[in-house]
Amino acid sequence: MATELNPNNFPVLSYVMDRLPSFTAKSSSSDDDKPPSKSDPSSSSSSSHSIEIVTQMPHLAHPDVIASMTSAIADVSQTRSVLRTLGPRPDHETVDKARARLAEIDASLSESFEEIALSPDDIDVAEEKEKKRKEAVDVEKTWYNSILKLNELHESYEKLLKEGEERLVRIYESAEKNAAAVAEEEAKEVEVNEEVVSILQQAEEKPLDRVDLSGRKLKLLPEAFGRIQGLLVLNLYNNQLEAIPDSIAGLHSLLELDLSTNFLETLPDSIGLLSKLKILNVSCNKLTTLPDSICKCGSLVVLDASYNNLTYLPTNIGFELVHLEKLLIHLNKIRSLPTSVGEMRSLRYLDAHFNELNGLPESFGMLTNLEYLNLSSNFSDLQDLPASFGDLISLQELDLSNNQIHSLPDAFGTLVNLTKLNLEQNPLVVPPEEVVKQGVDAVKMFMGKRWVSMLEEEEKMANMKEEMDQANADWLARTTSKLKTYVTEVSEYLGSNSPKDPFLDQQL
Image (tube, rainbow, N blue to C red):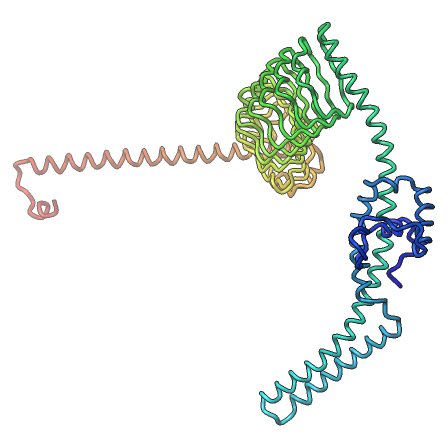
């Protein structure tokens, strides 16, 4: 039968499929859990194949490997069960006849419908004839379609067999590697645990100023680490830590803490008690937020939170981290920087590329000591820069590539210390592309001249306004003077005893 597997073509798949529960009825429930009997003549060939393949691939005897393989070929097993119920694959001639007959039926049905449509019968009679004719044809078409469908199922089954064998081979290869890795990891874990215990014992006997446990595959940091007095540097880079104990707050003298390349999703609030901490590296983790308490680490000089899932920074981070000189937040999902970032007056290096920044706060221009700035690859989110950008008087390197910036800030030309500039992949209009191609000096000169022209135009407009205001004032003074004279003359006229002119009295 076509559903039976050839061990020569599918050795691993045959072995695993032979160990799947049968989908046919069994003689008794007590037989359900029994493997195929080796003494059963019907299974002698299968047993021989099983012994041979297990000898060649010993990990096939491991229950976990078999369970994984069984799960991986569930689709093959289900398809085999269905095909066993539906029957063997129709031969090529039967399939061709079914296709030809279906084409004939469709053609005949079309001709029949045309005849009914052209007949003199009324609409109801014609519709009834059409309905009966279609019902009669549908029965026959269903039979031929089932032949084609069965053939397609068998074709799919053959593809599944090849894919299934490939899947099982990959699983076995992976199991071999994992077995070796597990043995190696278990040996290392014993060594690591012994090393951790040794460090804690040493700390009890004498002060330690540096602990390096990088690359040890640590999954847990003991609470006792928080009691190591005098520790200055703690390196936990490249482990498997999912949490840091609150007891870390006990490391009052800690200056450097490296938690990069772990599985951390949060940092403990107690981290804010590390008041002397100068360097904190939490890059390459799974952090979605930084705790607000991190702002209390007022001695921080370097903060690396890159390669995480951060969406924002703490609101007051700039007000309290006033000594921060280097901030790395690239490869996150940050949409905006807090206004307080402008208070980081010591900041010299800021890398925020590959985020979702939609702009910078106006206070950004207060970072007058900033020397390096990378805002590249914020793509469609970053479209403009604040007017205060020109106040970054210390800026030397600037990368704005891969954004949607149309125009540089008017005061861009005042960045006199700028020596490196990348504006690639932006729809820039100001400055024009031909100026950008000439380099950073050409861009600064163009923007500087444009800025001077704008200032001159503003001054000219201000002078014109002043002149107009003065002219209006002079006109008003003259008019007022004339009016006063006229009023005086009229008053004198009305107050005199001389004969009055009736016409003038009437006009007045």
